[in-house]
Image (cartoon, rainbow, N blue to C red; front, side, top):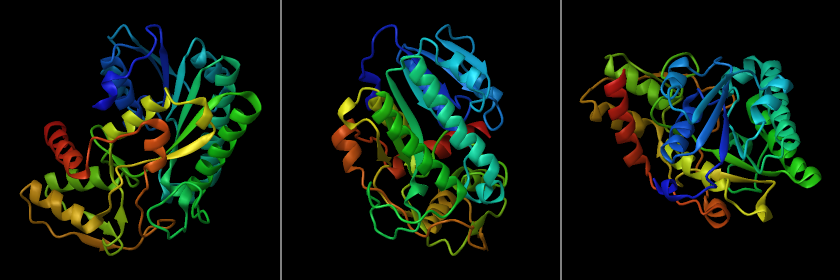
Length: 324
């Protein structure tokens, strides 16, 4: 946890939007562990009340139930805030293909509301969640900032638009913005349930309960799976980054490449199971291979991820075994 030694001003207040979700709740927990104040904004549409209840008795934690699609709520949430960590969004590529209008409302209009509220409230830094999906159909590996392809889903489009708005807010209004292109984040409190659940927690839960998981496609697709602690580090270090690199986006990953069938077999073995998967159709809008160059984040954010896939997956499996 290389971020625990980071120093902020004693009166620093962080706002984490989507703070009741998987990534957001882990960010809130880390900030509280460091002794700083955090305000969580979440409408609990995909976030969980249980992730609020974990911290509600901490005097440094404040919860606002509200929606980033409402500007007045965003203005209230940004009052007195030093750093915004904007995690609120609707994820899932396949779901965005089914619900493009809703994704535009939440992921684009909601982020724009937050940018404007941060600007009007004098927020020092605005760090926001982008996505590896912005690389689209680019087949170049590793993925490097500046070499994006054609977008493949409404979700990817919303993240690309967010990056462009953030860039403009830096250029036009002097708001320091930093986009973090997450690559397949996993870890504790990631929801294993539902049709659009991420693959790692879904595999773990189904195997724990002796169910046969479905692998979309042939299982030979590869991803740069990134443990949650690395994402926390990137967010907090972006808050201390130079204004010279504001307005830009950075890959946040470990820099590895894991094949889906290998991950399935690893989890199967770790749980002492021998369950054969079901192979289903490819998911619409998915890419075949993805792994990240993290050189830009290393150079400009001081990003130095501590958690390899192997280290992270062991911790994740242990957590789910204890908590499911």
